[in-house]
Each structure stands twice: as C-alpha cells, then as structure tokens.
Length: 324
Image 1 (cartoon, rainbow, N blue to C red):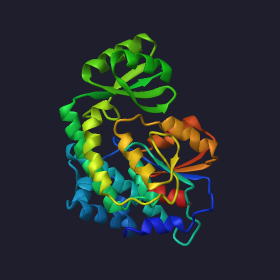
Image 2: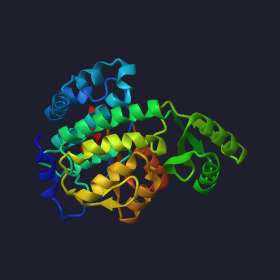
Image 3: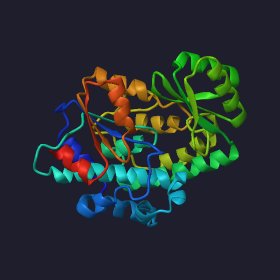
C-alpha cells in the first residue's frame, strides 16, 4: 500500500454516513501465528506484512507467524505486530468484498496501541510510518519501564469515583476505564499493592495484577512520552478522512494538530474506552467491526450497547462470515 492508498479509499466515500465503527485492539491480544491464514489466502493481507517488514527492516512477519512467544510479547515487537495484523484483517475483508457493498466506517477508534491502527484506517498515517511509530513507542515504553518501574492491575466491581479516591490517597493512577466496573490502575509496585489492598477493603469483587512490564498510561511513562514526541513530530500526518475517537478525549479528532496532541497525551493519560463506546452509541453507531486478534473490544461493546451489531475479524473464517 502506498502512502495515499488508504486515504483515497475513504475520502471518496466521505459524506455518506454509514453508522459503522471500525475498532482496533491494543497490546496484550498478540499470539503466535495470528494473521498467518489471512496472508496465505488474501494477497492484500500479505502485502501488509511485507510492507511492515520493509518499513522496520526486520522480518517481523516471521516472528508473528512462528514465534517464539517470549520475543513476540516484547512491547517493541508486540505493538507493530498487532498493528500489522489489524490492518491485514481490514484489508482482507475489503478484498473479500471487492466490488460489493463493503462496510465503510463513519468513525474509527482503537484501544491504546489500536489508535494507531485506527489512524491508518482513517488515512491519517501511512502504514509504514505507523509501523515505525509504534516500534519507537514500544522501545520508549520499555525504556521508561526500566527507568521508572511499575505495574498495572485490573479492578472489578468498583465504580470510577471510588477507585479515584483511593488512587488519590496512594499515588496510583487510573490508566484505563474499560467499563463502569472494569477499571485498570497503574503505579509503582508499592503504591499498586497498597491501592489494591484498600480497594479490596472498599468492596472490589476482584483485583488482577496484569502481566505488563510497566505502569503504562500514567506519569511513569513521562520519559517515553518525551522520546516518542520527537519521532511523532517528524512523521507525516494528514487530517483523518474519517473522525477518530481519541482515547484521551472519548471524542472525535479531525485535524493534524489534534492527532499529534492525542498521541502525545495517550502515553501518560487515561484510556477512556467506556466513554468512547458511549459516544459511539450516542451518535448512532449500529454496527462495529473489530479488526485484529482477540475480541476484547467486541465483548466490551456487547456489554455497554447490546443492541449494536458486532463483527470480529481475526482470521479467514471470520472474514468470510462477515462477508456473508
């Protein structure tokens, strides 16, 4: 795909609302062999993997298809890998429906890392540039995690206000609001442990320590944000042809400046996913397509807006099922 191909494919359809949202997952959904069958069946999917390999000057697709798992799970590899698979899924569905009525998004959104996939889908960032950006982002996050160690944990069964009150007391931060009763917190190890003890005492149904290398989406990523900002400033960005619902705002961004600001703020700011889902519901989104490994975002959508029709595109069978 050249730099302008994704942009033109959406700009030509602009102005025709479809009430469809394209969703893209974040880190943690990766698994060895993801996307391999798509590359074997759909030339457009294979083109995506080739393009990402070339952009990064490394055989990332071999790592995605063959592992080892511990290497794929490294943040600097997992992020471009999920990006590549997500865009390959989208391209595969479009190829499968070529000449037919392919779904066209009225908005796009991605969870954390997935926001970069959403920007590619919206024509704001070219795929090679996005691959290089997320690789840099991953390396910067690894560096920040080593410099300012920390962790993350999911809190189930408590409301945002209660979690925020405890975090204010301990120094931890809310990093991610997936659902009203599913909140992720981040902080240094001592603050995290104290916060989880207090939240359990306040009635949390369950707390789960996440297997991540750092306190993402918190002040501990300040170093990463500064390092990433340098790469971001030199990356060509266009105004999105489709509104992108930004993680930190839970509202659409439509300008180049807004895109840069949202991506800078995302590393240290809270992922407002539940509010993003409510916004999609508010503007009348009737169908969502989640492109990429797993079905985390589809499950969250079903919980928050059960009347919305959902499709998960992750492999050849799901492409064919969505194509009807």
